[in-house]
Amino acid sequence: MKNGEELIHVYFMPGMAAASSIFEFINLPEDQFKMHLLEWEIPGREEGLVEYSKRIAVEIKHPNAVLIGVSFGGVIVQEMAKFLDLRRVIIISSVKCHHELPPRMKFAAKTGLFKWIPTGLVDYVDYFEKIAFSDFLKKRAKLYKQYISIRDKKYLDWAIKNMVTWKCEKPDEEIIHIHGDEDVVFPIKNIKDAIIVKGGTHIMIVNRFRWFNENLPELIRTGKLKKKNKNKQFI
Image 1 (cartoon, rainbow, N blue to C red):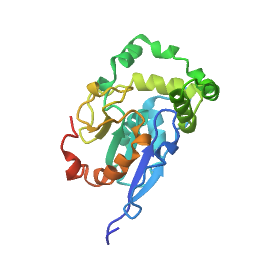
Image 2 (tube, rainbow, N blue to C red; image 1 turned 60 degrees about the vertical axis):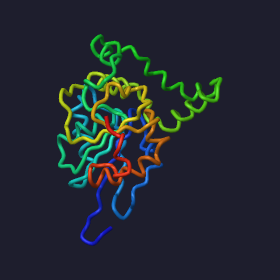
Image 3 (cartoon, rainbow, N blue to C red; image 1 turned 45 degrees about the vertical axis):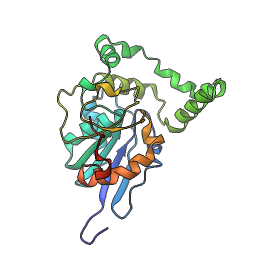
């Protein structure tokens, strides 16, 4: 850290039901940044997204901090930003407004089909890992088991509802959006004005961590990619 410069405090919000351990491979230079990992809390009865985000925002203890959110965590940090004085907001594998949601989620919101998602099945992850009949399924089950921290049905019902019914007509133009071109949860065809990670999937924060370790420091400091990575990265 150069003389006179203060550490930049960076707060990370994981994806839906995920633990902060999804950031275990993310390393920022300790002489420039201080990482803080946020965790999900169980929502109160009838607690709305705004109220919930305001409650989580209390955990941000430093002025001019940076918020980074993954997937539904990206929605939460955008809502939190309304109550905080921040340096920057970065979302990963997420959406900036409900217009970027895929048609199936918009349909689920319009018809109420999201209410019929069997969220209770998350309790069967351990069982699924045992009966998985292919290496791919076994690896996927192990991944879910490793990173899912909340299996509370009330939380999952609340999170899914607030994800698909999120109302945001116009995104904040200052938000930095990082998205993979192979994300099947939020397909890239619906995403605008994002930094594109080639080959990145919805879980690229875990399996493409080297890209983030190389590029996050500059993005946090300046809001821009390094010059060598600038070309062909935006849509």
